[in-house]
Image 1 (cartoon, chains in turn yellow, purple, green, orange):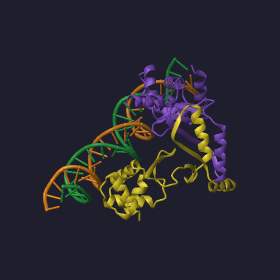
Image 2 (cartoon, chains in turn orange, red, purple, brown; image 1 turned 30 degrees about the vertical axis):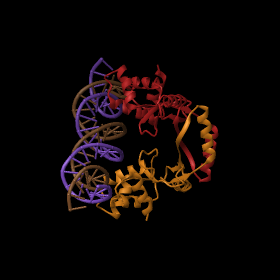
Image 3 (cartoon, chains in turn green, blue, yellow, cyan; image 1 turned 90 degrees about the vertical axis):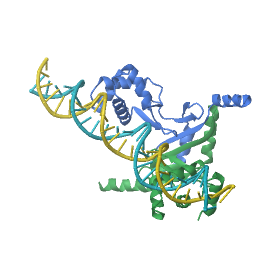
Image 4 (cartoon, helix red, strand yellow; image 1 turned 135 degrees about the vertical axis):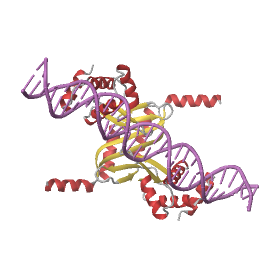
Length: 149
Length: 149
DNA sequence: TTTGAAATTGAAATCCAATTTCATTTTAAG
DNA sequence: CTTAAAATGAAATTGGATTTCAATTTCAAA
């Protein structure tokens, strides 16, 4: 699995290697991201029902502190986590119909943001951007039900 | 004060006109926005210490539902409210040093967002964008203390 | 005006995710 | 091995958001 990642994380953080941490890391890095703690915990439970919720919580927090996980809070208020990878620098399109989350990246957007910041004499360290709306699927569904109803 | 606004809100919402609602609305629309419930409540208290926290909470919620207030959640997780006005369509620059919040609007940005959405066959209903960083003041302060230290 | 149903208020209770506590267990350095 | 420090996990706590409910107030109709 993610053995090397696990080892380097433990080493770099001067942490102790535990079965729990390794299992949680494996589950997390093989998940599709944008999951909340309850969802991650549920997946961990399937692998090892002995692992406590608190441990999952603390492990995700550790991973976040060490840059291996990213915490996201969209408008619904839920705290979600995503595994950090090379392509972690992205924003989100979120469907209000089905909850689908699509990631995107746009260089022009970043350039514009820099320009805005400069105009206000700000130095940006990071940003958050989400576009909320309806995906193609949900829009066509809506049309159909409108036709029927 | 905001007597007309109050009356039209009550009328349009088929609500009852109460002293509490009028006072809360006045305080809220004369505040500078981006305040959390505790802050708004504190201000209301100064005008009328008899008004309960729950009533402030419910009134802000009502105002939000009726489009007179906007709820915002930035990365710090706090729920803030701002009075809705003609220029309510804006995004935010947020200083991580002093907490200063600057509003801005950018048409080019919106156009880009539309383009991105179209590419993913999304229909945007609204968005959220915040740029986090250091304002000019905080950056110059940092430089000075670095010089000293 | 008076009346009374419905709406509103506010203190207290509840909810619920996030976080902490603490007794026990595990890790790993010596 | 031994042992101090770290980690675990169940339970308790926290804190903001929300609901409950008895008492009060509003306002339309009599």
